[in-house]
Length: 283
Image (cartoon, rainbow, N blue to C red; front, side, top):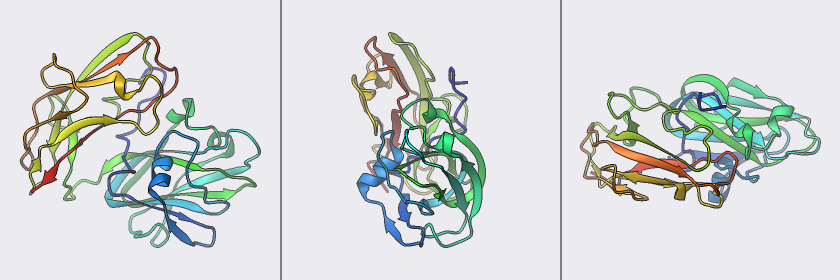
C-alpha cells in the first residue's frame, strides 16, 4: 500500500509524449485529432480536457500494443446534474479509435465519474485486464450535461515487441520496476526519502546516445513539485537532471538515486511528478 492508497496496478503511461495518437469523436462518429493543448489536458490533473458530449468518446491509439492494468477516467464537473456514465473500451486492432473490434473493460458511474481528479479521486483507479491492446476509448453514455475528460492509463508494452525505448530498472534485480516502486504514497511534510533505480535500453538493435533522466510535471503547485525532487549518480551530488554515457542495446546503467524533500510549506493534496528517461538520439 502507498500509505492510505492502494498501489497503482502498473506504471502510468505517458500518453502525452510516447507517440500515442488522440482523437475526439461525436456520437455520429465524426472524428477530430486532439490539439497539443487538449492532449496535455486529458493527461494532466486540471479541470480542462476535451468534451465529446453525449454518446461521443475520446480515443487513444498506441504506437505499439500494450497490456493495460488500470484506468482512471473523470468528467471534470464536480457539481451539477451529470446523470451519466462512461464506458472504457479496448481494441486489439483499431487504427483510428473508431474502426476495429471493441470490448468493454470497465464502466464508471455518475457518482464516481464527476469527482474531479485533482483530489483523492486521482487515486481511484479501476483495475482492468486487457492484453495486446492497440487502442483505448472512453465513451460517454446518457446524461444531460457533460465536461472535459481526464484519462489516466496504467500498463506496459506487450511482451515480445521490438521497442526502442528506455525503462526504469530495479537497482539489484534484472527486472523493470513496478508502478508502485517510485510512488511515495502519502508523505508528511518536512520529511526526506531516497530510492534507487537503474535505466535499461530495451532496444535490441539501437544504441541510446547520451540518455538523460529528468523530471517534469503537467500540473504543478507552489512550491513546485519538481523542485522537491533531485537526482544523483553518487548519493552526494544532487541535480535536477542527469545525463549518462551511451547505453548499448540491452545495456543497463549504473545505480542512480532520486530524492524527495517535502518542505513544511508543501501544498497538501495529491501531486504527480513524472520521472522520465530519454535518449538524445538513437543509432
